[in-house]
Image (cartoon, rainbow, N blue to C red; front, top):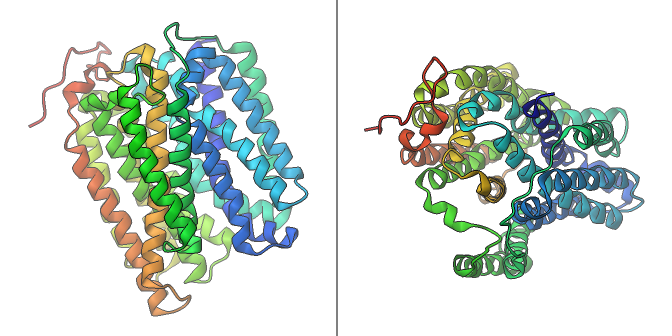
Length: 471
């Protein structure tokens, strides 16, 4: 079997599980709290524990894959993730569940970047746009389908099944990968950067905690202020340490590449606006319009269908057009469509909201595929592991900051369900998300098609040496 097919199967399976797990749990928190006899706000530690663990292991994944081999690290991470899923489903109390979620986050933090590096190595630059038509779908379908699947499982079975559903797919992916994947390791992986690992874990962990806890406890609460400011200080120190290190955990010098830097900024801002919208919309439908969790999930889900439609077109035209114009068109469309969501009120038909979400998805398909394809066009093969870890860390930060920022905006405007102030608050949140998308469009102006020449080709399939520098 072709190595490209093998990598595609295991990468898509693992990526879908890890991203789905980040969203499917949210709609079941109230049921977890009720079963364990704790306050609903305490159940958010289930989400925070996962995010903190993710923040610690995401940046380190590149070194582990290079040093110990991508196949070995990927399979171990997959086994840890699935095993922790079983333990989460069997948890007898909230502390146990939080502990098992931390373990699960460790597996998830290693899976995604290592899998992405394997995919980038399997497909030469000129074929990555075509491959991304399939391989990028989990990043779109999983966040959108999470509320639907979570609502169905929680209502019909139990919240425990949001973890048990990982078992069959995970076991099959592990067995397939164990027999079919080929091993690869980098001979020049270097020493383990302990100062970088500690600073990255503490800095990102504290920042993620503040961003996740801020909307719940309030941004002025002592623990949020302490962890937020402390995390920021540690991240500043991290930058100074890593730039002086001969073998850094996070190779920040990759940002010296104009193409990688520009596309990282685009994905950071685009993810903040897009996933922030996916977070805000179900809350708006439930808190202001009184919709059920399942109904709100079904209203949001057309976004994924929109991406599915557009990504098939974008994957075909990318080699001839290049990333810059596709990103500009998509991000401008995303910004305008999310702005329309800021006009929705209590009388707006639900099918119209679903149509707007479909439009958001259509335009995002013009963003994700060219951005990920172009970002790694000029990265040497031996640096793909570290660059994939850095790119995924940036994307995860964008997601966390987008959710936190939109939550803060809604909180500032003081939402009250079924009232004008509730509408105003959520409208402000959607307009903020639209502004993030338009800022991403401005960042896309710095992308140069000529830098991504390795991923561009003529209709005959022959690579072309360079694209014309955009005016």
